[in-house]
Structures are given as structure tokens and as C-alpha cells.
Image 1: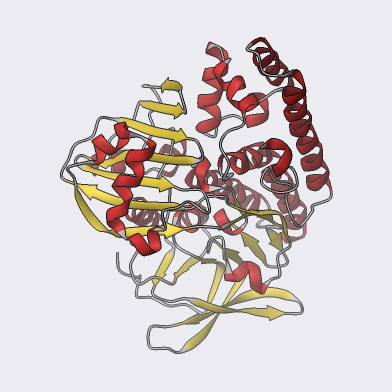
Image 2: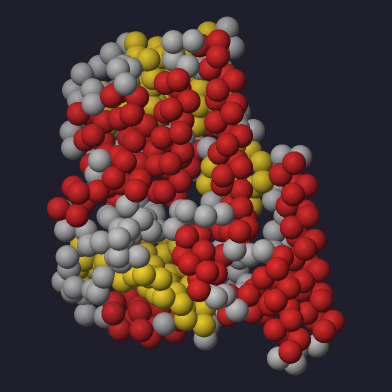
Amino acid sequence: MAGSGRTTSTVDVAVVGGRVAGAALAARLARAGLRVAVYERAVEIGPTLSTHILHGTADLRAEGVYDDLVAAGVPPLPEVQVRLDELRLTFRHPHDPGLCPPRELLDNLLLERARAAGALVHLGQPVVGLLRVAGRVAGVEVADRDGRVRPVHARLVVGADGRSSPVARWVRAAQYLTFRSGRGQVWRYYRGKRLPRVLLWHRVGARLAHILPTGADEYYLCAQPPVGDPVDFRRSGPEALLPWVAQVSPEIAELASGGEPVGGLRRMSGYPCFFRQPYGPGWALAGDAGHAKDATIGHGITDALRNSAALAEALLSTWDDQRAQPDRLRHWAQRRDAAELANFWYSQELGDAAPVTPLRKAVFRGLGATGIRRLDEVMADKRAADTLLTATRLARGALSQVLAGVPVPAVAREAGDLLRLSLLRRKAFRERAAEAPSLSGELAGALR
């Protein structure tokens, strides 16, 4: 998709970043009649690091792109198969299937929606700085393709520019509950083979792999090795991916075999996860710029769409009364934190480099029909994890371990450590602590 070709020196909202969060927000604001400009560093929107996973259709339908994605060949996925060591779970939701679109397809469709709504989309024109007036952000400095820097005045600047957001850095947005993922993400596209319409997510020990179809005869294979894994993908290269996956899941490796690789490996590791103060005088943060979970949970796209919609609602409700806007944004930020916190902690546990603890595994093994449905809803980002991993279920899991012959002191020690971690997390959130308590941090010795 080419840029709009038009430039302007004054807009209502300047959105920095044109992928999921920025494009969806721009479309909503432009449809409401605001003058919106999107500035994206990339000359064209291509693949990007992503789990690709959306476990339901509601957010895509709300943005008006679900039917376009299916028409482009992205298959709906009515089933998810999870393996946790010897434990296997299957989730089926034929009336609300998941979808795993290639990011360049999804992001470009969202940008087209923003353009159709009236937003000006500028590709290959990065924002290199902010304008300020009397301590308030008042616009952006944009580098045109010829290298010249021009000012664009705006009543609001929104940073939708990812985890390492320059906008967040320039406004010195406070960051809290920070931790780094305990595992990497390594993935590659393939084509030429039709996969069943199922998302497979398998974890054995500390290693994790998943595979999912992204098109009629296209698919995505992902390894999520723990930090310190013996295989170094930076040195071993793309041919190491399939043998590594085969050690985790011969089933996934068999599905992946026979396809033609498209491009090389894409990697990230040790990336930060956090909350950031998401607004201030003349600025706001959307998507991963404001809040980012561990990618292992696969909630990034869903979070970005949901929170951008909530931000748009907050802005539009007070656009004609700027004095009321800070209060409205404060409520929006509080609701964001409350809604995301439990699954943020759960993402930290999924991303930890250690194997799943015996007590946690006992809890999953003891899930009845209601619990399995709730686990499916947690994975789909429709339910908070603390409604699944309750004290009652932990107690039942502990009892099952004791009855199975696990020494009582060992069970009590792990249960006590999990309780202590829960209390530390509550305290850290209440105090907006810079660092998040972690399983691999101060409780590592007790939990392993």
C-alpha cells in the first residue's frame, strides 16, 4: 500500500506507528470526523514478529476485517489442541473460531480501513521528535523521504510504536511491573502444504512449540526455547528449526514437514514486558507501547485491538471538552490495568524458562468441564486467569499430589511459595513497582 501522497501541517491526532494498534485507532477516530495522520517508519508493511494468534472473531469483526481475511484465504480455526507434557486438552468453538492471519495482510487491511475513513497514511516517514508548547506535547517532527524534517502540529500525539516506543521514551512515560521474558521466539513461514484447521500448542519440559495455518496452503511454525537452551538459532540457522520442534513434538514436526520455507528465521529473545503510564499532556500510548505481555500467551493482537477501541472511546467522549479529557483518560488507564493484570501475571508464568511446577500441573490435570472451558477462555483473552487458578483449585491440586504420594512438606512448600508470590505481586501492583516479582527471580530456588 502506498502512502497517501498528501501532507499537512496541522491535524487533530498524529498517530506514530501504522500496525494493528495505530491503524485500528486511526480508523475509529477518522470515522468520528477527526483529522488523523498516521506516520509509519516502514516504506511498506511486511512481516513482523508476532504469534499471529486470535482465538476469536469478535475484535476482527468489530474492526470490519474478518470477512476480508477469510476471503483472502485465512482459514477459521474451530479447534485448539494443547499438550502439557503428558496432559492433553482440546478446545472446540466452531461458532467463534480463531484466526491466524499473516501480519502483513492484517496490518495492511487495517491501514486501508483507516484510509477509507479519511486518515492520511504516510509510509516511510518516521517521526523523529516531538513538538512541545508550554510543557505540553503539541505535535511531531516528521522526516520526509527526501530527508527533510517538517513539523506537524496536533492536539494529541499517540505512540503506537511498539515495546521500544520512541514516543514513550521522549515523554518519559513511567514504566512499572517490568520483567523480561524467560524464553525466545523463533518462527518461519512455509507454503505448499494444506494443514488441518487446528492450532497446536505443545509444551514439553521448558520447551514450547506451536504450528498454525495462515492461508489455504500456508502455515507458520514457531519455537519458543527457554533462555539458555542448548540450540542457538543465531548460529545454527534456519535448518535447526524443524529438528528442534521434533524434539518437543513429533506431531507438530510431522505436520510442518514437506512445506517450502518462505524467507528465513525471525527471532526475538529477552524482550521486556511491562505496563507504562499511557497518557499525559498532549500524548497517549496504544498497543505494545503502553502495555506488553509475554508473547507466549498470544494476546498481543487482541490486546491492541481492544485497548485501542477503549482509547478511541475515551478520546471521543471528551474531544469537545478538553478540560474533562485527563480525567477520562485516567479512568481508561485504570480500567486497562485492572483488565490486563491477571493475564499479565499468567503470561509471565507461561514465559518462564523453567518447566511447569508439579502443583500447577496437578491443577490443570484436575480441571473438570467447567475448568477446561475457563482455560479456553483465558487462552482466548476472554477471561482473567485468576478466575481459573483459584485458591480452591490450588488446594485440590495439592491434595491430589499428597494422595499420589508426594511428600507433604514438598507440596506445602510449593503452595506456600505460590501464595507468597501472589502477595508480592499485589504489593508490587499497588505500589507501581518498577520491577515485577517473578518465578525465575527471588522464588526460583523454592519453586524448582
